[in-house]
Length: 342
Image (cartoon, rainbow, N blue to C red; front, side, top):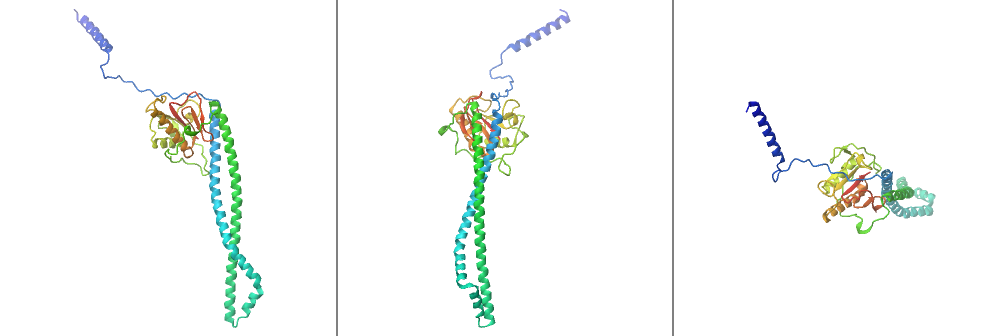
């Protein structure tokens, strides 16, 4: 056999051996590298105008509620001012009345006569000084009475103004409620859910509040914070809510920003809280359903502190103006709790 023939035969045998090895199944316990795919985001089909209506309605509702809350606090302060002023008036009025009666009986001439009847100049000076002190004391009482009456009148007028402010805010809240209900009708939200199924728990942890504007409203925010769950961005308010949910002990898989789809996700104002450590799958146990219930209850209890726009969980949607309603969107949200932010 020539040298060339031997080299050809060696190469052929090597190729056959390599192919044979490739066909042998892996030994038990061996796993070939297989990167975990990114869990698919839950499907949501956009309902025309629903997202815009909810966002606008939610912001107007929050603004009116902030005005109402601030006005009610102001009214409590004014009520206290009225009580204090009226108590002061009650104390001063008998004293001033007594002084007026004595002045009427004695008259100014009698008072002057009392000074002139002094037996010596020193006595005259002493009586004049005493009379001046009495007059200053009584004048001070009169001034104090007038000031207390003025304070009471101004506080009462301010209370009337606050009541008018509260009525306007309450009317606005009612208007936003109607608008929200009409919008939610598009996703089956016509049935109010009450009683033990409303997923509101007073035992949920308290969240640390997100910053507000000076007037108590929620300022607009841009998507400029790094999203801890993706390579995208979220708002400061969403990041605060994300941290508070985590701090409350809800540490399973979560996804916030995504570039496509409707509503708040592309704006960095929404997160989907899964029931599992990775990916999304429908609740398959009592423990998973309870996890979702508790998470939704936490968001609802702290909605005002965090700036929650709405929550969707297990075929229901919660909106501040309406409470829990039924929900029949494309995703029934039985595999995650959805959180949207103002």
